[in-house]
Structure formats: structure tokens, C-alpha cells
Length: 144
Image 1 (cartoon, rainbow, N blue to C red):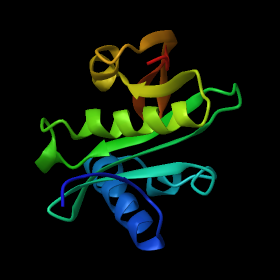
Image 2 (cartoon, rainbow, N blue to C red; image 1 turned 90 degrees about the horizontal axis):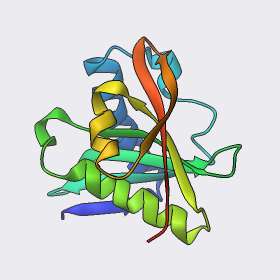
Image 3 (tube, one colour; image 1 turned 120 degrees about the vertical axis):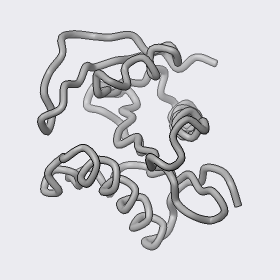
Image 4 (tube, rainbow, N blue to C red; image 1 turned 180 degrees about the vertical axis):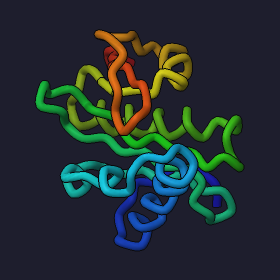
């Protein structure tokens, strides 16, 4: 089984968290205490699978501004460069459009800003620090 699915079970949510911990906590050194936040329950989570194994995840929720906020985009290092980040973004953006959002916003690690720029996201504001990693806010319209 290959593809991206919406997380609908506690078991799938645990798999998504395992990917996030592997990428953000183990690989990038983000403190485990800030990796899970108060938005988990309200967010729609996505899981990318290869042969049934969880290889990537992302989530989206409605930001205070009303935009779709895409967050926690992560792909295991063993599957980077295979297009999973793009497929996760496609799924999150499609779900956001279906929910009536007309724009998406995200806080990109500066090292990943080029990936999002290639998808039509534009930088908004200055670089800021989040969990010890430089980030920049980016946004784009969600028209088809």
C-alpha cells in the first residue's frame, strides 16, 4: 500500500507522531516537550505510507486568521527525494480547499523554504527562531 491517507484512528495518529519524533526530535533536536501541542485534536492529520509503513506526515488546521495552517510536514530521511512531501502538501491543500479555505499559511524551516516556494508559497515577514531552528512564514492562495 502506497499513498497518503487522512489519519482516522488512534493507531494511525501514533504512527504520525512516530514520524514527527524521528524527524523533529531525534534528527533535528527539537525538544519533545514542544513537538506535540494544543492543536493536535483540532488538526486534520495525514500519513504517507510505503508498503504499509509510515514514511511521512503533515497536518492542517484553521489558523486564527481563517487561513489553512499547514504544519508538522515531515518525511523520514530514508524516503526523502521520493515526492512524499509534495504528496502530503497536495493532500493537505486539497482538504483545506474542500473545507472552504482560500489561502494557506505555514512556518517553514528556512532550509525548506525553497520546497514551499516551488509550490507557490511566498515569504511573509522576517526570519524567526522556533525550537532553535530558523523559520519564515510563507503563504499562498489556494485557488485551483
